[in-house]
Length: 110
Image 1: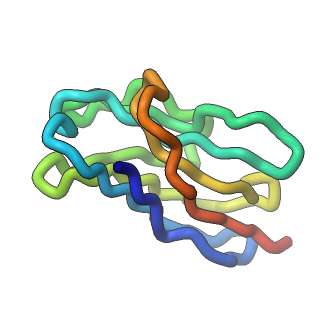
Image 2: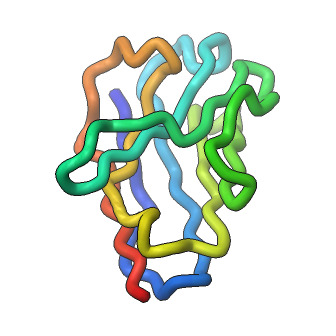
């Protein structure tokens, strides 16, 4: 039900925009979030957004979460990337109740 995309290899200081498509009819009424899991670390919350598009939380001012309810898609704009941002990025509800998808790998080279 969740398909993340947009990851890749980027140099430090670069930008990426991740997308996550939600397959279902309830997208516009649920709060969504981006999470990431770096090698050897636990999955952590990166950013979250209300159903209407207001940011609830962002771990850093370098990342901006947004959504398009008409497209059932949530985005994560990542700027000024650092090597420590290297991780697999996932989207899910803020309640984390949907099955985790495969995520999308972001690799930042220094």
